[in-house]
Length: 279
Image (tube, rainbow, N blue to C red):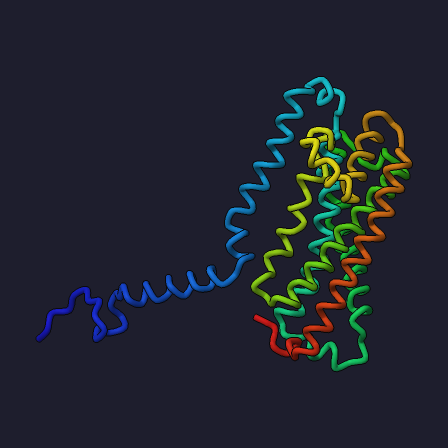
């Protein structure tokens, strides 16, 4: 009668521990990681973004502590408006990815549905999802922190709509990228919107950034919105020039996002990829 022990050779029964099987799985995951640049970037992405955002914020509060005292609920307003932009982006991306995960693109486009109609429906559902997510949080801030973002009045609508459009434009562009590159790039649905966060001046003025970075920041609609939000919350003024800049830039970004989405869809359709994408 043979004594059973821990074996790792090729003839070992499958219920024994095998370092070869472990090594094979490790190699599989390594190849998946090596073959996907988005997955590699994601490993260092979140720690870097958090360091950048809170590093700039710490620097600003250290140099302007009296501003922080006067600002009151400015950080609450910043968090809520940032969530508008984030949820608008995710609302487009998640609705799109759900069709990818369920392999439903072939069924969708066996109907008379046009790609631009699909894109428009993604924008609408994104707005609905954003309202459902943000409004309860804004209402909860009133009893918890004695701060109401609704006190901004009409400027709040301008801020909300501009951030909603910008987030949706980014979501469309990312969805197009996933169509072009496949589901290996789906993590970009969460990652790309955070890339613009340090440049948007959510928690600190754009003047806190290095001089060479400020023009890049002002090329984003979100930077103008958050600068306008601080002016409305602290000084009680609505900066018309910031509003005009944000609207103008949003027209450009929404056009680019829609164009990227439709181009990627056309390429995927011509290559027969619509029936091949899924989990």
